[in-house]
Length: 125
Image 1 (cartoon, rainbow, N blue to C red):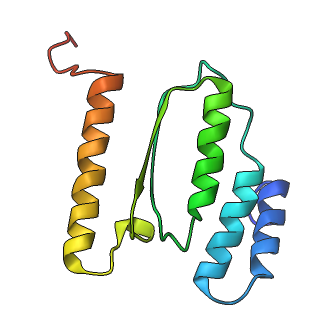
Image 2: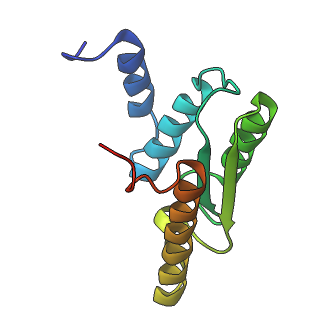
Protein backbone atom coordinates (compact mmCIF):
# COMPACT_ATOMS: atom_id res chain seq x y z
CA UNK A 1 0.00 0.00 0.00
CA UNK A 2 1.31 3.47 -0.83
CA UNK A 3 2.11 5.80 2.02
CA UNK A 4 -0.90 7.92 2.95
CA UNK A 5 -3.38 5.64 1.15
CA UNK A 6 -6.16 3.84 2.96
CA UNK A 7 -7.14 0.29 2.09
CA UNK A 8 -10.26 1.56 0.31
CA UNK A 9 -8.31 4.15 -1.64
CA UNK A 10 -5.72 1.57 -2.68
CA UNK A 11 -8.44 -0.82 -3.84
CA UNK A 12 -10.13 1.93 -5.82
CA UNK A 13 -6.82 2.82 -7.45
CA UNK A 14 -6.23 -0.84 -8.33
CA UNK A 15 -9.66 -0.98 -9.97
CA UNK A 16 -8.91 2.18 -11.90
CA UNK A 17 -5.66 0.69 -13.18
CA UNK A 18 -7.61 -2.15 -14.79
CA UNK A 19 -9.72 0.20 -16.89
CA UNK A 20 -8.82 1.13 -20.46
CA UNK A 21 -5.53 2.97 -20.82
CA UNK A 22 -7.15 6.24 -21.93
CA UNK A 23 -7.55 8.92 -19.27
CA UNK A 24 -11.26 9.39 -19.91
CA UNK A 25 -12.00 5.72 -19.23
CA UNK A 26 -10.07 5.85 -15.97
CA UNK A 27 -11.68 9.11 -14.91
CA UNK A 28 -15.17 7.79 -15.64
CA UNK A 29 -14.44 4.63 -13.67
CA UNK A 30 -12.99 6.62 -10.75
CA UNK A 31 -16.09 8.85 -10.73
CA UNK A 32 -18.32 5.78 -10.74
CA UNK A 33 -16.45 4.32 -7.76
CA UNK A 34 -16.75 7.59 -5.85
CA UNK A 35 -20.41 7.97 -6.85
CA UNK A 36 -21.16 4.56 -5.32
CA UNK A 37 -19.59 5.73 -2.06
CA UNK A 38 -21.54 8.98 -1.66
CA UNK A 39 -22.55 9.19 2.00
CA UNK A 40 -26.10 9.49 3.18
CA UNK A 41 -27.49 12.93 2.51
CA UNK A 42 -29.28 14.83 5.26
CA UNK A 43 -31.62 17.80 5.10
CA UNK A 44 -29.10 19.67 7.24
CA UNK A 45 -26.38 19.36 4.57
CA UNK A 46 -25.36 22.67 3.01
CA UNK A 47 -27.02 23.88 -0.19
CA UNK A 48 -25.44 22.56 -3.36
CA UNK A 49 -25.08 23.93 -6.87
CA UNK A 50 -24.63 21.35 -9.61
CA UNK A 51 -23.69 22.53 -13.10
CA UNK A 52 -23.24 20.02 -15.90
CA UNK A 53 -23.13 20.04 -19.67
CA UNK A 54 -25.72 17.99 -21.53
CA UNK A 55 -22.92 16.49 -23.66
CA UNK A 56 -20.52 15.76 -20.78
CA UNK A 57 -18.47 12.67 -21.69
CA UNK A 58 -16.62 12.50 -18.36
CA UNK A 59 -19.43 12.84 -15.83
CA UNK A 60 -22.62 11.64 -17.49
CA UNK A 61 -25.48 14.11 -17.13
CA UNK A 62 -27.70 11.30 -15.84
CA UNK A 63 -25.42 10.91 -12.81
CA UNK A 64 -25.90 14.58 -11.98
CA UNK A 65 -29.66 14.16 -12.34
CA UNK A 66 -29.51 11.11 -10.04
CA UNK A 67 -27.70 13.25 -7.47
CA UNK A 68 -30.39 15.93 -7.82
CA UNK A 69 -33.03 13.31 -7.05
CA UNK A 70 -31.06 12.18 -3.97
CA UNK A 71 -30.69 15.78 -2.79
CA UNK A 72 -34.42 16.42 -3.24
CA UNK A 73 -35.35 13.21 -1.41
CA UNK A 74 -33.11 14.20 1.49
CA UNK A 75 -34.49 17.73 1.61
CA UNK A 76 -31.15 19.35 0.72
CA UNK A 77 -31.54 22.74 -0.93
CA UNK A 78 -29.97 22.66 -4.35
CA UNK A 79 -29.88 24.17 -7.81
CA UNK A 80 -29.05 22.33 -10.99
CA UNK A 81 -28.12 23.82 -14.32
CA UNK A 82 -27.74 21.71 -17.45
CA UNK A 83 -25.89 23.60 -20.17
CA UNK A 84 -27.18 22.39 -23.57
CA UNK A 85 -24.56 21.12 -26.02
CA UNK A 86 -21.69 21.57 -23.55
CA UNK A 87 -19.06 18.99 -22.58
CA UNK A 88 -17.03 18.62 -19.38
CA UNK A 89 -15.22 21.74 -18.10
CA UNK A 90 -17.89 23.77 -19.90
CA UNK A 91 -16.33 23.17 -23.31
CA UNK A 92 -18.65 23.83 -26.24
CA UNK A 93 -18.37 23.01 -29.93
CA UNK A 94 -17.17 26.53 -30.67
CA UNK A 95 -15.19 29.16 -28.81
CA UNK A 96 -18.37 31.23 -28.53
CA UNK A 97 -20.32 28.31 -27.03
CA UNK A 98 -17.49 27.69 -24.55
CA UNK A 99 -17.41 31.36 -23.56
CA UNK A 100 -21.21 31.51 -23.15
CA UNK A 101 -21.25 28.33 -21.05
CA UNK A 102 -18.52 29.62 -18.76
CA UNK A 103 -20.25 32.97 -18.33
CA UNK A 104 -23.56 31.24 -17.51
CA UNK A 105 -21.84 28.95 -15.00
CA UNK A 106 -19.99 31.85 -13.39
CA UNK A 107 -23.13 34.01 -13.16
CA UNK A 108 -25.10 31.09 -11.69
CA UNK A 109 -22.34 30.49 -9.14
CA UNK A 110 -22.28 34.11 -7.97
CA UNK A 111 -26.09 34.20 -7.80
CA UNK A 112 -26.13 30.94 -5.83
CA UNK A 113 -23.54 32.21 -3.35
CA UNK A 114 -25.34 35.53 -2.92
CA UNK A 115 -28.64 33.76 -2.39
CA UNK A 116 -27.37 31.09 0.01
CA UNK A 117 -24.87 32.97 2.18
CA UNK A 118 -25.46 36.55 1.16
CA UNK A 119 -22.98 39.35 0.92
CA UNK A 120 -20.87 39.06 4.04
CA UNK A 121 -18.46 41.89 3.23
CA UNK A 122 -20.35 44.20 5.55
CA UNK A 123 -20.14 41.82 8.52
CA UNK A 124 -17.72 42.59 11.32
CA UNK A 125 -14.61 40.41 11.31
